[in-house]
Length: 390
Image (cartoon, rainbow, N blue to C red; front, side):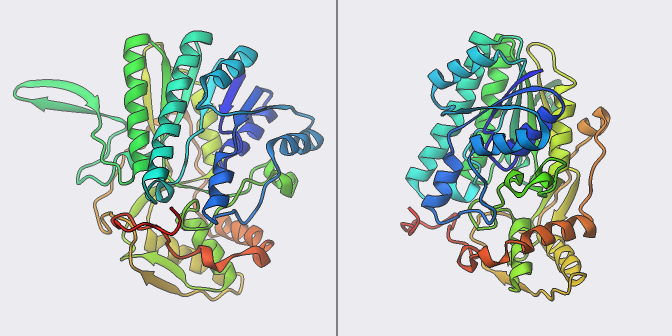
């Protein structure tokens, strides 16, 4: 297939590009390096610094003989999107191109504005590029399980049937996002649903949980092909932070009580899910929503698993509870449905001690580059004070 991949420089975008190109697809990636720029501005550079896209694509071609077409440009500019779509004539577009950090979106007004304008503009431009230049194209959009929040009922797969005063109908499942970033994802879903039912576009919206992992068949070929790995409090994830703290020999920092529960998945399963979605395109006018995760863990459970895996490598790691900078329930009911991908054939890679040890070994190779100052939270959700980062 001809595939346009928006946000091809990201933690998910680059491994996805390599995976699809290795399978023989004609892959066009576009990125404007926004995440790299914001990471530098906030002192949140990744532990593993990746070469730029052109150099990555060159290394990938040397290692595999496969081609990834690189376009450096801003998806928030419709002119850039028009150029990409005219050149690539995509049969599918994978949309990763958004400011990806909840903490960044909560720093202050300018960061919130950038997040809102960038994320919604890219989704809007994607929709109209499809309408004008590739009307049969299947949009695969990366959403987030964070759209749902933590309701006190089971989280259905995108939709819910409601009976009210003797009548019934089907609606998008109620959303209750916990950050401005997650709220932009909610608005994305509403935009996509409007254009699907009104203009007949084809959309799969992936409600993805936090992703972990560095190893894919392609990324292990050369360090230049590894995904970027953020471990800081702004662009990192809780599991990345725990792994890096374990290697650095400092306590794992748990926000508050640590009962916050989410759905997680291995990077390899993100690649699986993208391929499954590509292989089962939806009908015109359809918005298919799939909850994309394989296991649920509370933060304390993740800490215990990292401690256990670290111990097998001779690392003794403690735990430290710190005040929670986020406005969230720390203990809550969490029962999300996730049968869609299982029905499509997903074979999950679960969070085993072996998977954690593999990540710990890769992080250990970069131990001298770990910056301890990036570990503790610098952004507070409910603060009205001007943040130093702002």
